[in-house]
Amino acid sequence: MGEGAPKQFRDLGGRPMLAWTVGAFRNHPNVVGVVVVLSAENAASPPLWLPRGVVVVAGGETRAESVRAGVNAALADSEASESARLVVLVHDAARPFVSTDLISRVAAASGDGLAVPVLPIPDSVKRVDAGGRLQGSVDRAGLRRAQTPQGAPAGVLRSVLDQLGPEARTALDEAEMAQSCGVPVAAVEGDPENFKVTTARDLEHARRLADSGMVTRIPLG
Image (cartoon, rainbow, N blue to C red; front, side, top):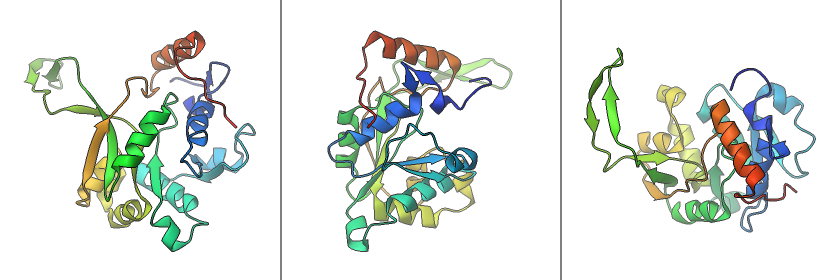
């Protein structure tokens, strides 16, 4: 993204990108709480525009450590019997256009394992070597692009985090963590609008969508 503020704090349609993401979950009828995991520096002085009731915690050096911090904060005030019934959804702050329907699909599919939204790959996929030479095509029939939120019952996700070894430092997402522990992972239909803002070009695309009114502007509070 280049120099400047962290991408989740950059302007998107007149408000920070993170505000879109928080608003989507805050306004879902079945979401009982939102935890925002930030760097230690930003967690020590969180944005004033975050709504009252949103819990902010500092993350760790790896995704797994950050997820553990978020899960612990989400369940801090829950009784053991209550927390066992809760579904925890882990979402990338840089996916600001997550929909109510997608949140519902993932939560409903978590069952006794983990659920992850996926999309088919429409383009042909090629294998290229380190020198930039084309080596051949890859069969995309069984390939999918993974998204977030990725969800699981709180007990299942905590068990996965407790079992993780050194490989957790390179785990790309919760689905990979769960599979490494033998936990079943269900694939559900993803949403093309739920793309991740990774580059400056992605941010410009997101801004065009926000300004055009083609995506739902969910209230933050």
